[in-house]
Length: 162
Ligand code: OFO
Image 1 (cartoon, protein in one colour):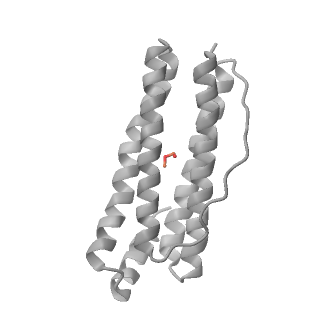
Image 2 (cartoon, rainbow, N blue to C red):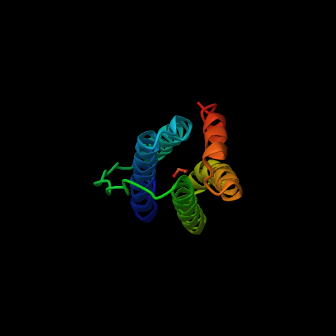
Image 3 (cartoon, helix red, strand yellow):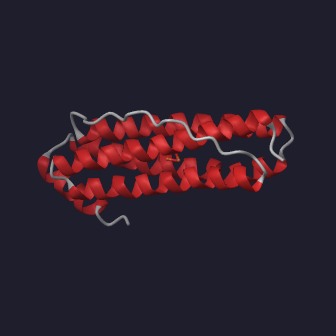
């Protein structure tokens, strides 16, 4: 059985992950609206991954005999000035999520909940990858300074992600 503190935080994390999915879906829609379908497809794939993350917390709570409690999802920002601004916002959001995951791990250890600590290990590793893949795009965009030709090349590259 999962403890009350961790249960509340895991339920809050379902909301964080659902918001992440919503935020990246909003970015996907914005990229479509500015004719960058590769960026849009990359963000749509990211959004699907975030839904999977939410479901991992959902399943873990249920498997541990806890009660899932779903809250309203906040409205995400609908538009950004440039692709760089959107990706910098995505990177800042991933850093926020990394802080959340580290806090959850600290709590699981403090509560001596070994099953939750083991479950959270996957997210600790995942956040390293999430920050790195988002930062890689930020760095490319910084190099190209939103030059149209370079944006087109990056768009084609990002389209390759499923
Ligand atoms: Fe982007 O890793 Fe979940 O939130």
